Image (cartoon, rainbow, N blue to C red; front, side, top):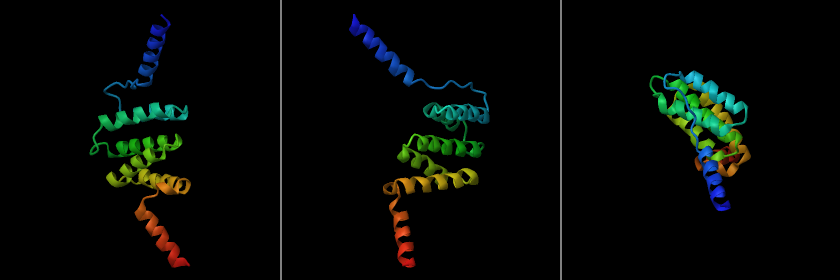
Length: 139
């Protein structure tokens, strides 16, 4: 009997951790972003990420480029706060390589610089080569 209760308990735990956020279909991306921001402020980073992913999935990059770019940036920022730097870098790279919206690009560069200061081994090789060349020139 204990085995069954334990099994049911484990299933419930795994199901609650897989819960998706529920967002009505006709809600504007700005409202979804506010919901995500609230979760971020409450340190519910994983839930905030899910809200930002809703923006990415529901809204196209042409008509909602600003909102989608910010969603990618914010996901990267959530991963940064969770110290999942590799994941953060992936999302910041998307912002830098796939969007021309300036504010999230500038912030992505700043956070990437901080990540590379904290974890130099994560710095891409081409950037490392540039840093080495600059240091060689100054010595």
